[in-house]
Image (cartoon, rainbow, N blue to C red; front, side, top):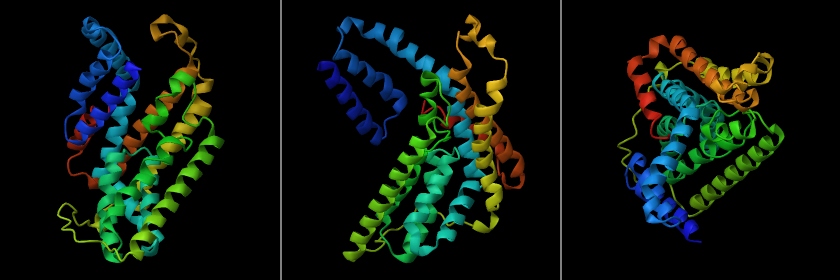
Length: 319
């Protein structure tokens, strides 16, 4: 019971202090040790930190760092090239103003399903959503919910093939790839999508019935977007399509026919292809997506080196 109390208390403090701006890099080890204090003698604290926590942290980073790194770089390149903005704007235009909530949800979903990080999606979609909601006078406070339904639910956890880290982490342990259990994934995805859209439409209807509009906001942080100087929709979607298709082809057709008997050797961790092929496929797919973004959008880069560096640095915090 004490150990459970320590875990819950540590998680609550982690959420609260992170929300207050304290770095997760500092909070993670401190609060992990707080949880230990509830379940082990105090003289084991340092041993637990160096021999358990840091060993586990090191193993996690070694296994998943390439996905964090390439995912963060891919997202940053999508943002700085204007591709993420182009996709979001095109989808909003396609659905029209009368389906503002749905357009924001779908735009967020398309970007995250293609491997763009939630952070990038938020910054790409929010200015478009704010301008749209302000124009048709619906509550601005519904924007976070609309982005969350698209970016944080079915495309992050349920849809087959999503390259999100939440989908990638279980693969080595269950020896699956990103497309495992597609039927269940699609069913769960439809339930999440339909339920999220229904709930957001219900909140909108309630707000409008109460006479609530966009509200009084200065929108000081919302920059006006120049959508005339962005990649075309096809240019913007191409890297996302490459990531999804290449992920599938590699995991289902290419890696299974390769000679990987060497993986059983102790030098390679005594593992099997089924334990690593899913990770390999996502790594190669994201790398190909990054390269395609770089070469297909040459005229849109202001500072390519800075974009890559910022993306690489951005991978450390999630780890």
